[in-house]
Amino acid sequence: MTTLRNGPTPTEPVEMLDLWTRLARHRADEPVVFNESIQAWEAFRHGDVTRILSDPATFSSDMSALVPSDPDIDKIAKGNLISIDPPMHRQMRGLVSKAFTPKFVAELAPRITEVTAELLDGLAGRERFDLVSELSYPLPVIVISEMIGIPSSDRETFQRWADVLLNNEPPADEPLLDALGDQVNAIAPTVREMGAYMLEHVKRRREHPTDDLVSALVGTQVDGRWLDDDEIVWFTALLLLAGHITTTALLSNTLLCLDAAPRVVADLRADRALVPGMLEEVLRMRPPFTKLARLTTRDVELSGTTIPEGQVVFAWLASANRDESVFAHPEVFDPRRESSRQAGFGHGIHFCLGAPLARLEAKIAVNMLLDRYADIRVAPEDGIEFFDVHALLGAKSVPVLVRPS
Image (cartoon, rainbow, N blue to C red; front, side, top):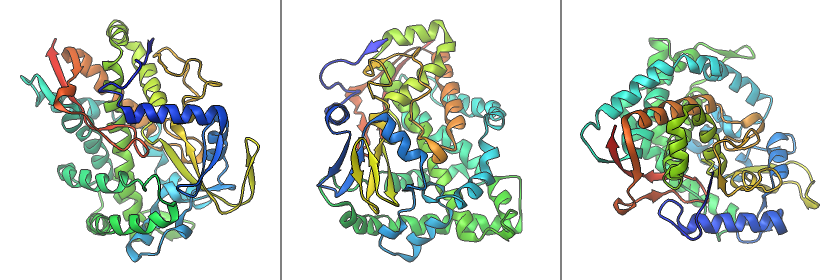
């Protein structure tokens, strides 16, 4: 077990420490609060967060009524699992759920192992490299691209899309509804480019189907009708983004956590059976997405506070995962912790579809890193670049210094 050090460190900068302090204060004193700056509600305790995510009838994922209309942006909603409510959510998720079951994902282990080995082979002789650009980003992108049926060689383009769409957090001091217009304008060019790219692949698969996911969707009916191009385009496009960011964040966060916990690294080398539990602990301490937004469909009470109908509520995953009433000594990094209640991959009907895949990719990658390197250390002098902690907990770059076994 490792207790995080006092004060900022290269792997836990001041912005992250400030976030932990704010979340802890709210859990203790204001578990549900209206944030005047952004004109939205926030919930911080584990019970409230999981209740919000478990009740789509009261806390809707559909925010389309709040977003300024744009012909291209509007199309995203047709295939966006993240923002679809039941019953359509259940139907759309059912189309691909079999491709992400633990059993099906386990069959991908040989290919994931092969890709991981190829990426690390390409680093032979190098003592310094960026973990994100060399491993934690390309690994999941190659795997998910092959599943979908698009060329993984275009991964620099996918990374550019992700940078725009996933790192576009509204200003912390601007009303949310006012900021949405600026967000739509900021992402619209990327959305158009992304949609055009994916549409070309959908058209090709309509003419020449193979055994990939796009081909399967082209040949699929829902309630007696065929899926249209927009549904398939945005279903697969957002699956591409979500299918890699979770693993990319999990692997980078794992190296950052382990760098601050050398005793845990020694334990892992002595007992590889600890790796899965260690990854769950990383997800608890640094979930990829810090919070999720919902829209109330009726007046509802949380922790003694009434939230009116039609209000945006942010459910803080990062806070729920450090709730002292659920996790004893939440600041302690303990790979042996019982972490089944951690919400790093969300909760309820929108629980991350790719969670089994992300866990397997991370497990294989961590074990191979431990096999190949006798020592792996973060090299902060080369510059760690973090995402905005209010949007994503992860790093854009994690320079490492390695010593081969």
